[in-house]
Image (tube, rainbow, N blue to C red):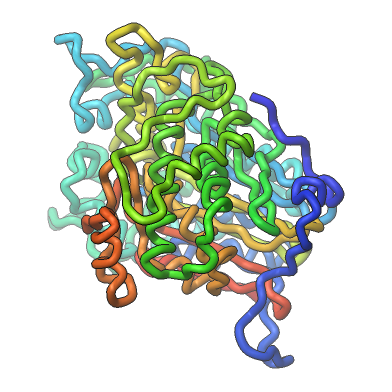
Amino acid sequence: MTFVKRLLPLGLAALLSGASIAAPLAVQGKPTASEKGPTAMVAAANPMAVDAGLKVLKAGGSAVDAAVAVQAVLGLVEPQSSGLGGGAFMTYYDAKTHQATAYNGRETAPAGATPEMFYGPDGKPLPKGQAMISGRSAGVPGAIAMLYLAQHEHGKLAWANLFGDAEHLAADGFPVPRRMAEAASSRAPQASQPDAVAYFTKPDGTKVQPGDIMRNPAYADTLKKLAAEGPKAILGGPIAEAIVARLHQGPLPGTMTLKDLASYKPKATPAVCRPYRIYVVCVPPAPSGGPAVLEGLGILQRTDIPAHPNDAQGWYLFSQASRLMYADRDRYYGDPDFVDVPMEGLLAPDYLDARAKLINPTTAGPPPRPGQPRGAGVRAPDHTLEPGGTTHFVIVDKDGNALSMTTTVESIFGDGRMVAGFFLNNQLTDFSFEPKDADGAPAANSVAGGKRPRSSMAPAIVLDGQGRLVEAVGSPGGPSIIAFNLKALVATLDWKLPMQQALALPNLIAAGNFYASEPDKYPPGVVDALAAKGVKLAGGPFGEGSGLHGIEVTPNGLRGGADPRREGVAKGY
């Protein structure tokens, strides 16, 4: 894959090809001095994590310093979504250089992984639920190693000083959040695994309830080791030995070794940036879902969706662009270290022109097929089944540096196995369970040792034509992440909604003949008008519900938003 070079102001202007320069998004109403907004902000899925991040920012820390503190707390209070045993993608913006950098902390498959790893004795793919709780499902965790790399490059405080709030909460106790309690009592297969049952069961034999005070001294001890040793605290030594031992236990033991853990390397590359109208949108490259978001935007750029804010035609165009985007993403995306991902072809203007012309302006047609971009080759249809167990946060520091980070243990509580106070991931179930089609054509997202599974995570940074920050946004949501992020970008950049209003808009996930949405959230008449166009909305998410968080720059300071579907907040100073 060819990456876009690091972008400086002149490079951004060239990308925009003479388009007028975008000012930061405007606030509504006439600003006054008393309305001056914050200059630093954190938006995340739990208030305890937000407070930990703000404390670091107020102590003079950078956005990345704060991210370490936020992740450490989220791993404790939102273990169903992310943690020390998971992976992540981050897009980082440097306010001085105007460079956008992508950090890849995606988990890797053990060297012993094989394309048929998720086949049963009958030679057929395992049931998804059985695979998720197996020892085969866990990849080498990368989130902490990724944060360590980013903090080394952009941190201002000592790494050892970033875990205080999380360690205190783990040792002294924290109130159980509602979503954590609901997940612990859910029917998810991981919630019924021995480690999860033991962790979430009180002495009286009942499961934890919202507001109960919960402690995790093992997690506090692990944080002390992380503070002192960095990521080698979990990628080597006693904790690594415990991870290997736990994954080698049944059912369906895995092949993880100490060498697999010690060999993990996060990546830092230039972000993939493309113009969208008067803006530039930057995301991580494959195997993230970021380039798919850029394709969706590229298709929509060839429509008049800005003229249809939150109306039936606007949502119709959104749905049809989404179907085209998903058709390509599901066929062609994988780990570019192992397969040729035709990103340049998928994002080429002539290809986007052709895909946009497939949108019938009035009536939805049959499901679109994957296109044939330059460099595509022959790929088998994808059979990846992506569950959701992910979170997202955004941070802007007082110097204007910003990050957008999506972090995950894959599905709820990962594989349900705990080591040293944290859950291990089941990220390898993000690979296609069927590596080839009947004719032998390989799937782009088939399993291989050392390979990173395809992801939908797509943390976004938006800049203006002079390389200045406009917004940072992203979401969890399994395969729906791409649509959730696309919605937020269209709502803020095209429909000019304030961040909070944009995130609260209905979600619409369109793939094939499937239109999942929230019909009760649309303005009157929109659902019926969409049905008349052939877009019949079904309730319920495609994968996991959204957890969008965003921060935008206004003339009066920063303005944040948190998805009302979760427990997050946006706070600044």
